[in-house]
Image 1 (cartoon, helix red, strand yellow):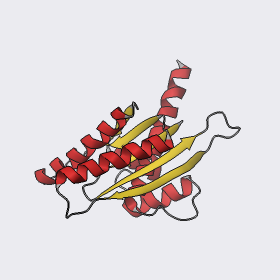
Image 2 (spheres, rainbow, N blue to C red):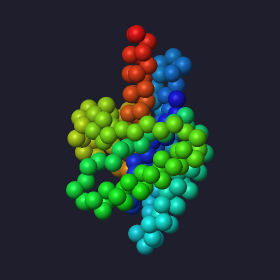
Image 3 (tube, helix red, strand yellow):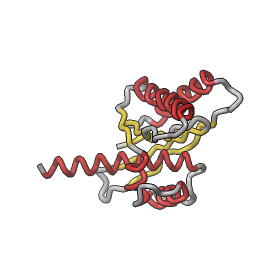
Image 4 (spheres, rainbow, N blue to C red):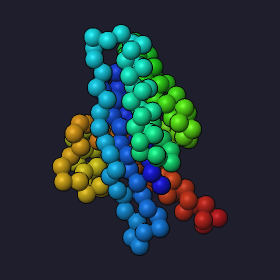
Length: 169
């Protein structure tokens, strides 16, 4: 299973691709790719959204994931910020749909808890645990890329748990 995780942001959108080989002798998480789509504050919103769409669809085509995992919008006291984040998230969902990929969505606490062991974990804790879980030599280039990898890891763990529960029935 190869999962493309996306951490949406209005300035930085992180992506991460993680693979789990269930047929291997001892299944392990494998880091495939990670990075950050950096958006210029000088560009207008339509151009920024077009950039996110173009880069995400190109990356999904390149890495050929089985599915996409996206973090849900967290509650924000600032309605304008939440709306802008929702637009980026909508573009990410559209990119996945355009590539014909199923999408799973996770609340921020449900991502951090299985990865860092603590729902309200700080970004540094998530980076540290992602680095350890994937056996990386160094932390991902940005907290956004680390969060995207965490979202992908969360989906893999969630899918494994669901499969084990179904097997017990």
